[in-house]
Length: 183
Image 1 (spheres, helix red, strand yellow):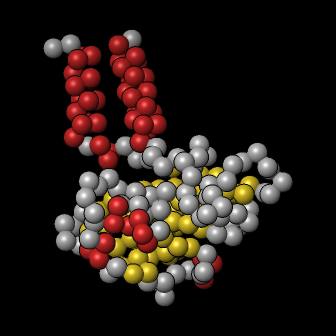
Image 2 (cartoon, rainbow, N blue to C red):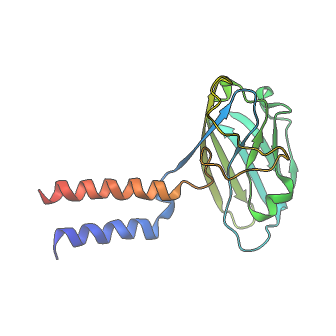
């Protein structure tokens, strides 16, 4: 069998059998002082029993941004920096929307946030990363992420799903390996 065919079979096998092997980070932008929605969602065809889920929003492994446990917010361990500035969309949790609203965005909020959801019954765990960039209010070219009613908007500066870009990057990597291999 030709080396190219073996390479393509291995590449497609990796993507098919290990779809989570492609790490992805969603990029969001916010203007200092504004409210931003950090996206996090799992795909589900039926309503989730949210009391079976723990939802952690954190920075690194030590800073607790928001915690939802046993069907309610548990904010006693929340970092003081985020006190009274975060909330989940409680009416959308059972649909798999674990996005976090962060109000009063500050330059110090420019971080990589991790959303971790765990189902205590099925023992499944999902993990998403969101990189928040914060600009000064002088930069008016950035669009807002929240409508006046407080609802999330589907804006290009904060996409809800970056997997397609991750797969494109992985395929580009494999293509470069293939080109080098065939030389």
